[in-house]
Amino acid sequence: MTTPAAPREPLLRIEALTKNFGGFIALDNINVDIAKGERFGLIGPNGSGKTTLVNCISGALRPNKGNVVFAGADITLLPPNRRSHRGIARSFQIPRPFRSMTVLENLMVALDFAGNRELLETEAHRRDAAMSILSRIGLTTRATVPTAVLTQVELRKMELARALATGPKLLISDEAMAGLSTSEVDEVLDLLMSLGGEDIAIIMIEHIMQAVMRFSQRVMCLDAGRIIAIGAPSEVMANARVQEAYLGT
Amino acid sequence: MQRSSIVFWTGALLFLAVVFAMTQLLRNEYPFFAGYVILQFVVLSVAWTILGGYAGYVNFGTNAFFGVGVYTAVLLVQAYKAPLGVQIAAAAVVGSLLGLGVGLLTLRMRGIFFSIATIALAIVIETTVTNWRFVGGAAGIQLQRPPVTAPFDSYVKMLFFVQALLVVLAVAITRFIQNSRIGRGLHALRDDELAAECTGVPTLRLKLLACVISGALISAGGAPAAMYVQYANPDSAFNLNYSVSVLAMSLIGGTSHWIGPILGAVLLGTTQQFLTVTISSEINVLVLGVMLVVFVVAAPKGIIGLFGKSFRSGGRA
Image (cartoon, rainbow over all chains, first blue to last red; front, side, top):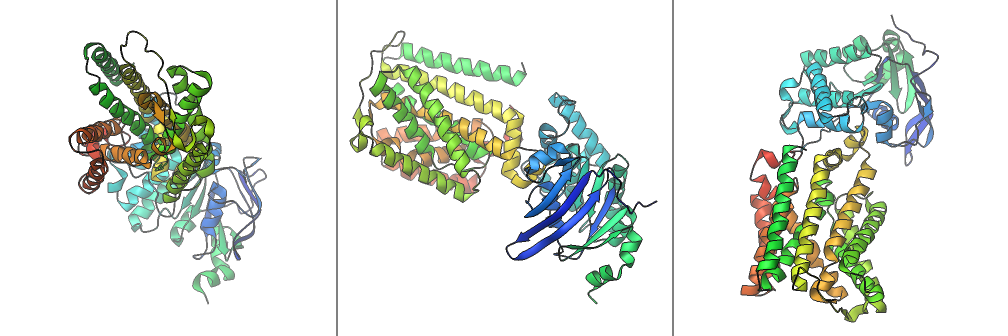
């Protein structure tokens, strides 16, 4: 069932990635490949560099050393919007909706600027596409509501919907389940699982272990900016260093 | 053409027809003299809103762009006796280049830092002009109006009509931006720049575009002022009052829809003209300040914010 070894042609290749903030080394020589359609769990204690890694992949930060290669092209120096056009989408740890807009308009931004604009020439086509994504996510009834009145779970879903609207090949979900109830976690997890079936690779950062275990084909654990374990979920969980990093024995 | 576009262009043509009829029927020059200033502020406020409202980059350098418009006209008149149309077109070009330059230099700054940089810009340009003899230097320069062309019987009436044309141009461009994906992109980056970038919005390019268009229109709106007063000096052309007035007009009207700055400029512009005649021109600034405070407290989204949903941001018309 699981595929611990990365396949030959990765969708995303991270080569010798190093990022420091002044004297603090947030990421130290990270090497990892992620395959097309792979469900990849990223774990690690707070401050271990998970979000920094995500920021380097999505373009919010530039690494000090190393390369990010996506679909065969080096994207290390591209700004986030160009990466989005190539198929990298993300949600944020703390939701960042466009607050002056409705849910539908949030998705329209994605469809207007990223997405497959050739396929969605008219405004009406894009609107239909946005509505179909919303119905899939279960937000149809909230389409015309301003984002300011959304609940936490709706905000999380809206962010995933907006990311999906860009037409990604790789979706990075940064703690999309933080602060949600058990049933809500299952709801979001099912959603993410179903996307994996469509050849969208997903990197899921999460602290909820059951979710990571159920979701991931491979799991990588970071600690203090280094990879301390990578492989099948059960192996990583059983790893002594991972347990030490989490439990601090 | 969409229904809203038909309504818009009908309204625009009607507006121009009324303005033209006024120039032909009214004999008293005063309404044109006062009306010109109000129309000028409509152009400036609408143009300001593209960057300051839609994109959320508060430009305090309106006076820089305005003054550059005035002095482009002065320079062309001094050097080539260029006609009014050429003055305005050239001012738009220079304004757009200035916008591009400002954008490249300052748009990586956000919030208050961007605003401060635009103030600095105005001071730099004013100092340059003050030390430039050919356009009059610190003492200013007198300009001779050329003879007026038919169908107008006075130069001020013609300027009034020309400024009305600029109003239509500025509003049409701003409306186009608001209804296109450019407007949506600007709103997105105003709400959250990083999220916008990660959603595919080319934020830097859009901000530059907003800066260029806004700058071009403000300079174009300022160009006829040289011929309007027949005199230009750096002190008045680069007066910070332009920045403050335009900011107040846009905010009081509301910046999420192009109609907001029009309402704000007409309301404040008319009030200012009225006060200038009845009390004194000094009291303008006081009234401006009081109105701004009142609106910030009572109607933070401006006049259009009071009229509900149809004019909220992203609403199309």
